[in-house]
Length: 294
Image (cartoon, rainbow, N blue to C red):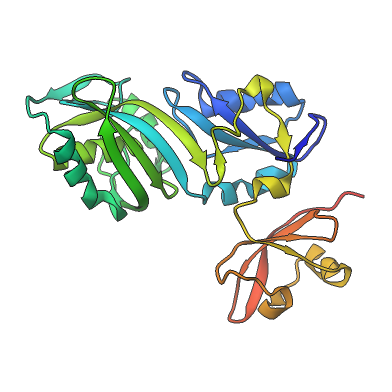
């Protein structure tokens, strides 16, 4: 991994968020740690959750949406037999059942949740409805009808957990997936109730928990290293000048290997110039063009 000193203005930091912190708390702490005001994060983690949270510093804040689009991996405990108001251990118990499915029954039920599935966002989520976040509405003691959303579950496995009626769930999924809803839905599919006990995000794209550090020890990695999951295309000086002004180019001029973007465009010295994406037939356009420092 390419690391830079904390005086660097632009880059990503792979943080291992600890329990009790909001994602905003991590950003606020990072501003002090790195001495940089312009910092954002990709992919909110709720306060009880731990694990990989990627920060963007300086110009990297403009690139965070490409991090958000990467698949994510989680490990959670499924507590079977009770449903809570928040679908996790922080909420009040709403319902209980004596129906406690076996591991095999949960595994069988989970097969229906691989691929494209519909999820109803929890009332404690940050989804906006009519200009207001759901968790703000929930704090007012209200519950409203939410439209289901399509999410993608790439891989899912359930194994024995730390004690009776607690199981371990591992998930690789697309952006926007609610693990607490997934746990609850699988439990109901198996004829029971369930909620998340503990939740940890173990990876965002190829950036996993091994790469992550507590915020106090986090380092800044290069822009291109943060975007390593995307195809990188190096251009010559002539094309560089066109890229810098956001020119629409013919696809064959960049000759990407992958048919679907976005693509990381760099110069001969591996400086990030732009992110390009598909445009009209046979052409590519800039999604983000980064200012170049002399």
